[in-house]
Amino acid sequence: MRDRLKVVLQHALPKRGLTTIAGRVAGARGGAMTTRLIRWFVRRYGVDMNEAENPDITSYTSFNHFFTRPLKPGLRPLAPADFVSPVDGAISQFGAIDDQHILQAKGHRFTTTELLGGDRTLAARFRHGSFANLYLSPKDYHRLHMPCDGRLTRMIHVPGALFSVNPVTARGVPNLFARNERVVCLFGSPEHGPFAMVLVGATIVGSMATVWHGVVNPVRTGNTAQWTYAEREIVLAKGEEMGRFLLGSTIVMLFGPGTIAFNPDWAPERPVRLGESMGNRPA
Image (tube, rainbow, N blue to C red; front, side, top):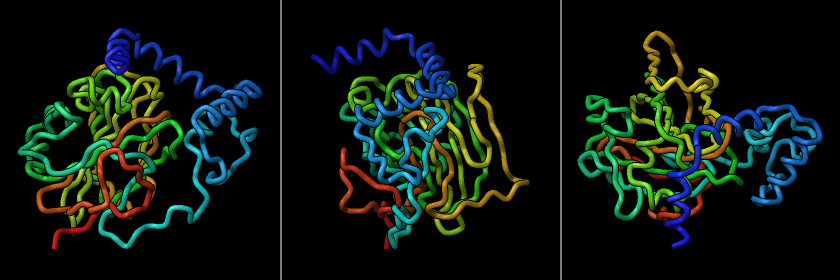
């Protein structure tokens, strides 16, 4: 009953207005007020500042500055695997793409076509492939890294709703990840073929950013936007930073058929750390 009430409230809340206000607050340089907000957040969510490159709460000039803080160098070594976890977070779901259907939660599925903004040709590359949905909670490190080497080919900003993406909402809102605003980043790899990293927005997620573009959705116009990179050599190595959430959310990864055999230790709701083994090429 409590979970159902939380989902009902998600439908009723003025999500876009809340997100706009949260984005302004997160970007404001409020001096002592910013420090108090950060201090409250660290206590409320149990953020481990000992992992931060800069653990001094008073030194952060804005909440976004704190939220996208880097980790201490060497804190997340890369596992000797073909694919590594690109984030600190928790596994929502992962596994095989059933034709073009992806499991969101028990009783809820969505399609790769829906996730990729209605592009059937693009979605066909991942038919019968594999997916992984990873959720970043408020206490997590919020920079995103590469699961393997890849060359950027295309980026798509898909407008949408701004539901929360926490586990309760994922269980209660159909097509959640394909309904919310998202940034689709498409890569190619000579060894692993095409793969996609989809950054899913959520309530109070101020913006999403990539290392090659900066903030991708500073103004929400309601129109799909695309960028292609055929004439630019943007190549990122496994473990290299590729983007960040300016407040927390979810990342969905898509791989082609026969590309990855997932780590047998992985399971839904299991915590993951950046750099740990996600899987290897099938034998």
